[in-house]
Length: 366
Image (tube, rainbow, N blue to C red; front, side, top):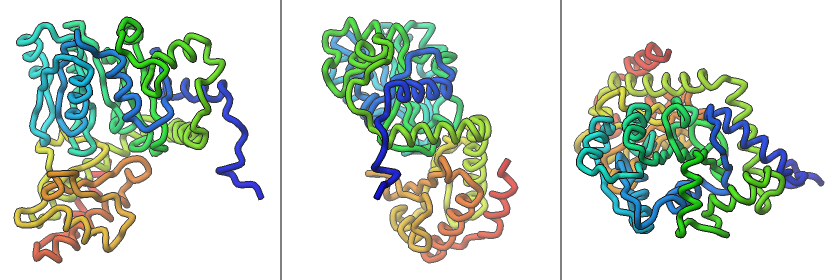
């Protein structure tokens, strides 16, 4: 008996390369795009370890937990790290980045997360990229959560290393990821004696044995199911239209924010300014006297399929996250989340106005 997920013909190098080309078109980039055979942490770490070392002075921008992780990797590589941390309920500004360069003109590497799904904020990459280019620093960007939810333009923004994953707004698999690499990032890796080689973390292996060799022979057996799923989700985005997909995410974020404000019960946006809120997920601050994780558990009891989660770690007590990304960026998701949260708040003795919340969400959907 054949099985469509098991009895598959081998994935050819040509098919693999064609999927890379489609991802490059999604990013509107002429840089080399390498699809990595693992979750996005693989190229995120590989890119840092390939380009950073004892001679690096890195400005590590921290607007959420992933920025903290990047700082740890940079220090482990021997880089001198200057952390620019801002409260998780806001975004970093280009002016803050400019001030960091003024204080530390030796900075030659900048790491930034575009959208922090964990905290619900998004950073102004275009403006920050302009500052980074003025100073000639290498620009490393985590666009895992933002790709397909908002514009991601490595070439226009001067991003040297742009890492994406398919599991959020793209609505695809978590088991593969991709990175676009500029020529100067490749050159820096080649000159870095500490850059991983003959390693799963090595981007240089892919450069030398795949890209430079004409993409004729793969380094190892590809993650076939994940590659086919990645191809399928890119096809789906192409069919719907990237602009339409991004508009759907923007509408979901605006509708969730408006609906939560109208719902009452003490819910407040976690990210204070709407312009700094990520379209991939909306974070809400639980009412005083309640525990976010308990509210989420009660909300999910009514519908376990809803994309609701409490904040991670120390944020579990105060943050509620509505993950309206990929196929879940729909009016139905927003309405379902608001309805479940209203029920959970009512169980904690909080007065809510669900009718007003649903009306506000519907009217806000663009």
